Length: 245
Image (cartoon, rainbow, N blue to C red; front, top):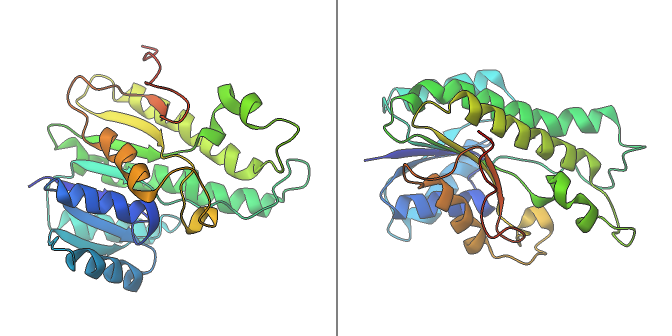
């Protein structure tokens, strides 16, 4: 049985991704900062008939928590096939570039960038033992430099500069990671799930949780001919851009 780790999986898009992967036959570890919330999420999914799920305490901003999660999962399986770096925070609004505090930047980058790097590095050895390892970093179209002029005109009410900056850094990390792993079986991509109706957005948006989960899982299940090192936003691009190498 293939295995997957989804961070921030106790609700919203992460929970949907965990459900979809379990339906695809994966044993899924649901990373949750609060273990009780993670266990409640597992119970929610097992009530639907899914059984290949387990909650793992994982605070991506805490190196000790990352190491403990790696040890716990490593004690149960020598192979991790999929890592979905879904955990993320917005940092709250407003976030004007001229006035956002350094504390805001540090808090958001700690989760959205440093947390992704820390978890990825911690689990890279387990992923490397998979014949088809996949890493999906959950990003946003708001971090696309190419789309910024279109998305953020003078009529746009606010600019979440801290959140945007963190996800733009995540996109670059994704490209760099994919490049360093280009001669391996890894596929590493950043996926925008769309403007999704969850707690994260105040239940506003143009996409359902089900649609968002499917967009992410699509790249967790790529075959050997699939793309790597790409930023994908199906709301704006029909297909990933050509790989730069």
